[in-house]
Length: 388
Image (tube, rainbow, N blue to C red):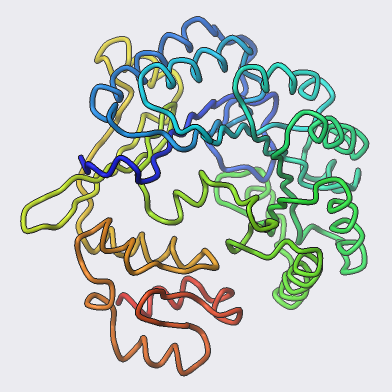
């Protein structure tokens, strides 16, 4: 394992249960009438202890509870996981501990308890401030409940974020303007904005719900940038906007290609170690996706890992380029060398790089490689052109 104690290192906890399944959702989430929290606490403790034996020398800089709906965890489970992480790893003094939550009135009542358990950043899945849109999206909260939850969050957390979706049926530019401005009045430091996409396996996919046409999609995207930039929340990643200093450290860790552990059903992780020749190799780790299979594997085999393998350098290169270009700062040359032991520009197509720079899609320097505003909307095609 890399000995760089000061390099960012995160732990992701996946809680796979929800009160209901939203028709657009393709995440690993499940609806269960009864959950044995004692069993789940024991399973997470076992995984924490197992991974700490391997990585306990690393300093944890961020912890993220995702799902599913982790705000539905019993407070004792949440507190137990955080306490065990702090017992097994050195933890940064300013460690970021984020929890995803839904803004229902029932969950908002638990915000203070979550803060007491160690959560210091809340990510609220509001999705819309329109009751009609919330009904279409299958959300269980109303616009008024979302507003109340945001006001409650502001009283308890210094750091909190709101998720919104655009590209919904019947949505207009004027309506989206109003929704964004209302959101800014409620959450002034961090807003994540996603276009509705119809993913295979979802209810919307089976029902053939159409996506918004490209022309309106582009208009909504541009209007989002204009409003949030004017409000002082530039995009630090394609879908994430924040006032400087309020970016989500854990998500930046992913996009920058740093190491992290994934605990819980379907969670992924990345761990880097030094190989021969001065290079570094990164292992990809994947936990069993099915919650029951994950629990059974821990009970019978002592671990919830389904597979673990070393990424070929080309896979790692593609990952670092594709994720790194999502971020406004781009791919950092020095960080790429620290993570791989290789020089970035030695592994890119020089003629394609020159073409994309001259075309106004990329900005390249001795220290950074990043997309222009025009390039951001063409991320996948630009990454393919650089790498193929």
